[in-house]
Amino acid sequence: MEFTVKSGTPDKQRSACVVVGIFESRRLSAAAAQLDSAGGGFLTALLRRGDMDGRAGQALLLTHAPDLPCERVLLIGCGREREFDDRAYRQAVTTMVQKLGESGAKDAVSYLSDLDVKGRDLAWRIREGVIAASGALYRFEQLKSKKDERPRPLKRISFAVADKKSAAAGEEALRAGQAIAAGVALARDLGNLPGNICTPTYLAEQAQALAGEFESITTEVLSRPQMEELGMGALLAVARGSRQEPKLIVTRYAGGGDRKPIVLVGKGITFDSGGISIKPAQAMDEMKYDMCGAASVLGTMRAIAELGLPLNVIGVVPSCENLPDGAATKPGDIITSMSGQTIEVLNTDAEGRLILCDALTYSERFEPDAVIDIATLTGACVIALGHAVHGLMGNHNPLIAELLAAGKASGDRAWELPLLDDYQDALKSNFADMANVGDRAAGAITAACFLSRFTGKFRWAHLDIAGTAWKAGKEKGATGRPVPLLTQFLLNRAAKA
Image (cartoon, one colour):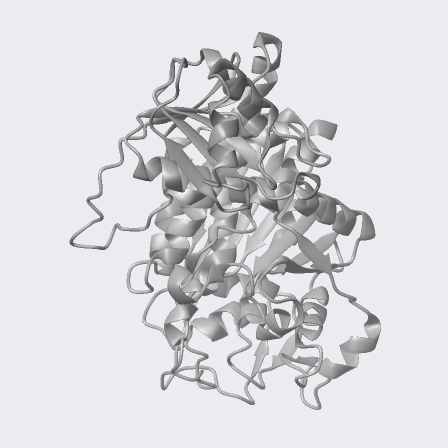
């Protein structure tokens, strides 16, 4: 799909389709009113007949537009005008793309970008329009022998801007939207691949492919002997039950000169059976998504490389499988992490924190400005926050505030949970420095408490994406989150550089 910006009024557009918004109670948007006036009141007459009332999710395609140069007019219901917010805007764009895909139009000019969204400017509307449209167009059909053969004539969507002066800002927003959308698509593709294809080795190959595509990116992959030499006993303990070799993937984006890097650490468990503490069979297939933290790191690296941000960013991805085997780590085993701290493994299904703790210790060598880990870490976070927002904790309040702001700006929101010392006692062990789990209470927080014990030398934040990284049911699939949040955070950092 090609995205462009285009100036001019809707009544002058020689396009296969012009898209305008209709609010509830049949209220015309400004662009719709212009079409209506130029067409002799045809929209007003149609709405009076009751063909559409403007409710959110409605769409009506008109194949005859009197006295207008466009071939079609697509009306999109936008709901109540005073309630037209970020979510309503994205829904309107998604509805537009779905309806255009069913039409015979090869191109369209959208005036949804001209609608007033509370607190958002034109650049935001164009950028988020591209991301929402790309999300609606996304399909994962790589592994189907018979792909969806429905004809899709739509090739180009143009977002309307008021004049040529606004076009420059629109072009920049378009570029940002396309970069973020590409990062999200990469994260979704990696997440949707099954565990027999997306192995630790495959993830490493994708990181190396990024380095081959972008001069600003380099990738180094550490294998088992190198991790043994580093003393990564926690990561390697998780990998013991699998025949797939573990990998520590280090991807560097160099765009910031001598600036201290920001390190993104992504959990890369390419399949999680729970190990000896095996999970129930129901929905275990979804544990292929346990590497979505890793996928979001690689997706973010792609986005910032396309944008050419003036920052240094390092992605660290510890990757392995967690499977039961005669050699697998057992409940009660005590392991030694790279930091030298010992861990009593009470539950082998709390493996993500074990691979992350060694990756966090490894990140110290970069003398980072900040470290953010991203992980499908706990079912407890799903219980606490559902599927709408990521859980967020950390040891540096300004960093937490930056991530919350980036989430609000991007619509990929997070919510801070209290990381208090009161919760640390849950990890006490009679036999080691700490246990890898506490009891069931506050499980998302005690998991973060565990990670906090390996972050004393840098500013750190933790994103628990267990509830947001994928969807179940009929819409089953990876979401690509939190690539938008992370990219917005880095865009904000770049603006201050």
